[in-house]
Each structure stands twice: as structure tokens, then as C-alpha cells.
Length: 313
Ligand SMILES: O=c1ccn([C@@H]2O[C@H](COP(=O)(O)O)[C@@H](O)[C@H]2O)c(=O)[nH]1
Image 1 (cartoon, rainbow, N blue to C red):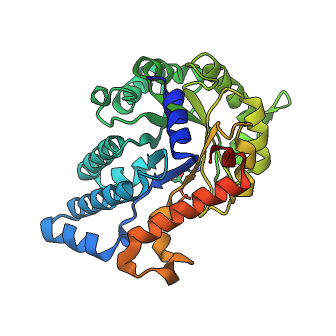
Image 2 (spheres, protein in one colour):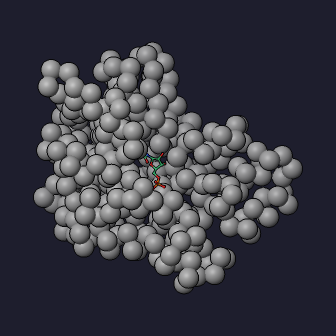
């Protein structure tokens, strides 16, 4: 099974949840034992941070791999630390795939067509992990340069059994600044959604969903429900649950009647569960992995109880 959405949906069905764990390591919040071990082995700050990120993400992967279908490493946190960080990102992606997880690299790439193809070849490995340096199953893509610049990503994704998620309606407070601008009665995000759904329709595999997906924020539940209807063949990646304030009720409209069609991301809320209640009270700092496990179970249960994803259980 090489098609991206077919693989993702098989993973969602097998884990019985659309919960997606973001891997967003932040040095100041890492467990003390991981930081000291990295400091004992390396001398430069970049190497210390990269080693600590790698260890932290490996251990996150060990905890969440039996529970969720996919992880989403955030490239920015790794890139900040230069070559050492980029190497750590590569190793984290590899480790997650080896653990059987679908890996979505959140790097929000986009450029003129010929350059976009280089980005696509760098990140999209899809079914063959040897075919790209950062060998992810899927990449987030910025459509601002126009629909022609999505084509190289689509081409490489289809060739390699990979996928992309195009930014359509983002979760940040200022998302509407450009995305809500209207031309001929349609908002910019609706125009992008129409292009993305055409691409999805043209790249369906054995199932209903295409290899081309959309990022739609949980923090705008009305738009999320609207976009599920406007983009029936488009798998959705939904950030904003947890730390950005959205709850399960806000993402209920992202799903189809079978409980498929969307994956719901939480990054800080899972990675650093130990820093907040109720996990801070329940677990000692060194039991951070137990806090991660408990927070992941709680998210899965919350989505099962309050959204159509409960049908997967
Ligand atoms: O619209 C968007 C697009 C991407 N993101 C990314 O998702 C995670 C969210 O992290 P939390 O800690 O769960 O808030 C992060 O990597 C963002 O860059 C998004 O939030 N919104």
C-alpha cells in the first residue's frame, strides 16, 4: 500500500485514533537527566542541544508509537541549531518511521516551481525511506507563491507515495489578516481550499482521500467545519488542540461520518505534559515519560468521547 492517505488511514484505523503527536523539543524545558547526559558528551552548545533533542524525541517516540498513528516533528526547533540540529531531525524522522509511525515533517516549504521540487525531493520519501535525506511520509507546504508552485510537491509526492499538507486556514490569532481577505465574494482561504481539493481529487488512491491535504486550525471551529464540507477529498491536519486553547468539541467538524478525514495535533501539551496539571501533581519530574503517556491517553479518550473519531474505537 503506497498511497499516502491509504497508509495514514490504515494507521488511524489500527491505532483507533486520529491523535497526532507533535515533536517540538525546547531546550529550556527538557528533562534534567537528558540535558546533563548531552553536556557530558559534547562541548559546543549546538551539539549539546541537538544530542538532547535527539534523545528526548527518541524517548517520546518509544512512548507514543504504540498509541498513535503519526508524529509531526517541527523542523524549526531543529534547524535553529544548524547542521547538528538538522542531523538530529533526520535521525528522529528515521527512528519514528522505524517505530511504524507515519511522519509528517512540519517545515512549511514553498518556492518557485523548480526550487519547490528540490524541497520536495529533500523531504518526501513516502513509501521508500531511502529516497530522501529527511525521509518523511509527508511535508507541510506554504501555497502563497501560487498553485503552480504546488505542482512539484504533488508530482514528487505521487511518485514516491508521499503526501503534503497545504496551509489553508492556520491556527494563529492573526490567521485572518490575509486568509480572510475577500475577492469576488470568496475569502483567500476558500480559494486555496478549492485548489487543494482539486489536487486531492486528482490524487486519490484506493480510498476517498487524496495525497494532498490541508492544514486547518482547531482554533477556528466554524471554518474547520466549513472546510471539511468544501474539501471532501482532502485529509486535514488540525493543529491548535491543547496549548492553543482548542478542545475536542472544536475539532468535531473536521471528521467525516466514519470518523476519518482528519488528524488532530498536540505538541507542547504532550511533550511537556509534566509541566502542567494534572500531570505536574501526579508525577515526579523524572517520571516525564509517564506524564507523556498519560496525556496521550487523555487526548485519545477526549477525541473518542467528543468527536466522530469515537467510531474508530
Ligand atoms: O496553523 C498552524 C500550522 C502549524 N502549527 C504547528 O503545530 C504545532 C502546534 O503546537 P502546540 O504546542 O500543540 O500548540 C507547532 O509545531 C506549530 O508550528 C500550528 O500550530 N498552526
